[in-house]
Length: 393
Image 1 (cartoon, rainbow, N blue to C red):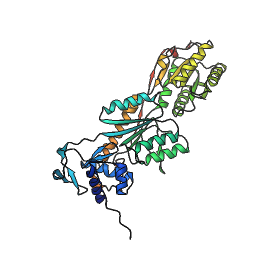
Image 2: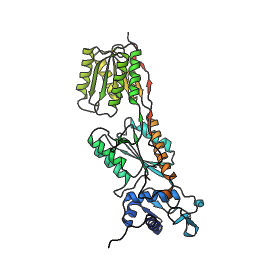
Image 3: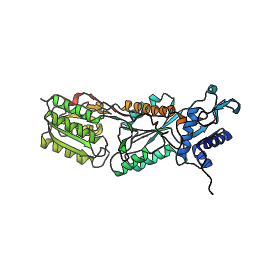
Image 4: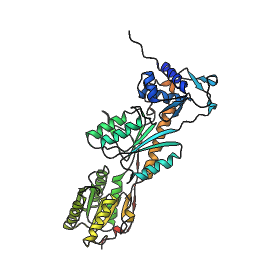
C-alpha cells in the first residue's frame, strides 16, 4: 500500500512548520524536505506570501518579523496560522533580466528597468548572446529549479528564429513564474498563444527613414542589414513596404556580417562597389556601427556624405558622434526596459489578486494570473534628423 499525497492544506502546514524551525528556508531545501518539485513549493509560497503567512526573501521564505504563534490568526484558504496584518512584514520582489549584450543597445534598456525599480525591486542581470543554449543556461540559473536562488519574474530577450528557438520559447512559456519578452515576440503551443512582450515597431521606424529619404529627393535607394540581428527582418519589411508605396527604386538590398566579424572589411567594400554600380544615392544601414564604418570607407574613396550618398543609421547608439553626424532611427530603448518591468509587476499583482480560496496550488494558473489577458505592447521609434541625409541636388 502506498502513502497518499498530502492535501494542499496539509502540505502548506508542513511547509510553514519547516520554515518556523529555522526562521527561514530556501526553495531547494523545502522541495527536498517535502518531496515535491520546486515549482510546487513556489506556488505554495506565492499563496502564503499573498496571505501574509510568510515573507518572501531571495531564494525562499521566512516567518515575518514580529510574528509569533500567539499573535497569529487563521488563514482563509489553508486553515493554518496567519500573522496579524500589523506585523508589517515586507516582500521585496526579485526580477531576473537576461539580455544579449551589455555593451551595445541593451544598456539603455537595462537603465530603463533599473530606474523604474526605484529600489523597490531587486534586478539580477545576466548577459547572454544570440545563442539558444546560452540563453537557456542563464535563465535556468535565475529560475532556480537546480537549487540556485529563484526569482519572482523574468525579463528576457531570447532568439526567436529556428526550431531550437521555438523549443526555447515553449520552455519559457512553461516556467512557473511570469515571463515578459523584451524586443521579441513569440507564440507557443498548438494554438500559437503569445507570450507577454514589449517591443519596438521596427518596421514603422524603417518606414519613417524611407519616407525621409524620399522627401529629400532620393529615388534610387538601398538597404544594408546585419544577417545576425533579430531586428533585421522587421527593418527590411518596413523599408520595402514604404519604398513600394512611394515608388522608389530599391537598387540594393543586402545582408552583411556585423562589424565585429572578420569578414566585414570585404563585405563593406562590396557594398560600396554595388552602390556605385547601381547608382544608389541613399542608404539605410542597420546598425550604427556598420553605418559609421561605411561612411568612413566611402570618404576614403572620395564619396561625399551626404552630397553623393546619404546615409541613415538604425539604432542611434552612437550615430550622432560620426562625421558627419548620422541621421538615425532611435528605438525607445529605456522605455522598453521600463515597460517590461511594469508589465511583469502587474502580472505578479494579478497573481496576488487571485482569490486563493478559489484555486488549488496544483491547479489554475498561479504563475501568470489567469484573469489578466496577455499584453503585447508595441512602442514607436523616432527619427532623429542630422547632417548625413542632406537634400538631393
